[in-house]
Image 1 (tube, rainbow, N blue to C red):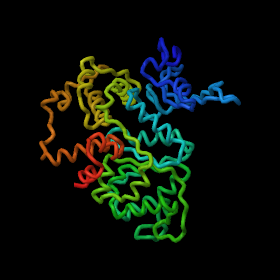
Image 2 (cartoon, helix red, strand yellow):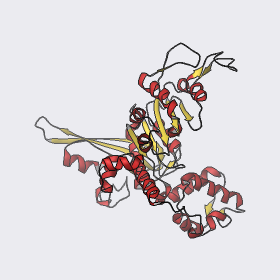
Image 3 (cartoon, rainbow, N blue to C red):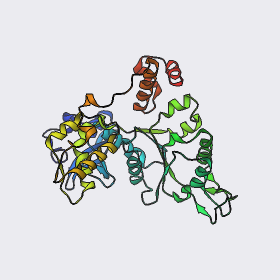
Image 4 (cartoon, one colour):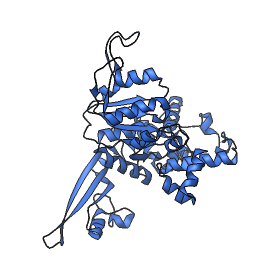
Length: 376
């Protein structure tokens, strides 16, 4: 612990879980995600400890396996997943656990929280990392565009189809297909996606040959799919196909302790040859800001400050929206009580990753009552 954590006492006495202590107590394997100091800086490490028993059933040895997650970490990673807060570490642990499986992953979170980066991390940590990662923006897709983009088309399938085109499902063969803004797929098109997932086959538009799909599916949405199911906007069978392993991405206001790292990382990416830093008084203002646009808003804020700066120290005084005190910023409209309750319940459901049973327990109501509130 002195080398890996720079602690003067065991990690379990410093607020972290210790796999050795857990394995000794339970006599079972234990697995945790820790942030270790390494020659490359601080990196996340997947630590697994397996107890070994002798013929008499007595605990004799431990086998410890450590795997570094180079794609992420406290220092800027290749994919830009940066942080060390508890909620970030929990999210990263879930990504790490599901990455090597073929289980579909559903990423939930507000706009700007980095859902595509999380999808890329799932891909980079998987056994399919050497194969394509193919993103698909599902917002605003018409029926013809949905089919031709996903499945491709044959020459002469429609006016303007002068040659065969490979679809994105085919382009993702052996790799990962990332469906972004899944909740925006119209109801009448959802059955086409369900059929692809259930059969593992598809046909190009205008074609008769049945093709076999081979991809790992990762989906993302900022919408409350569980509530959409109850209101009839999203197919229940498709939802249960996709929601096997939901991962909620925390909003930036929930991981304020990551702000200094994110600022450092974003400035290095925005101006790699220019040693930029923020004015000291700006850090306090950043910590007080709620960032409704999350990391995307932070990046835009820093980029504007960089363009306005004459030197290497960035000030946000010229940013009119940010320079105003919090009380002067636009306030949310006052809603009728029923609407406010409905919004709160749906936000809470998203925060719990769609776990309606747990939400009902925390709200002190029955699941039946919760279903009714979601369907209103």
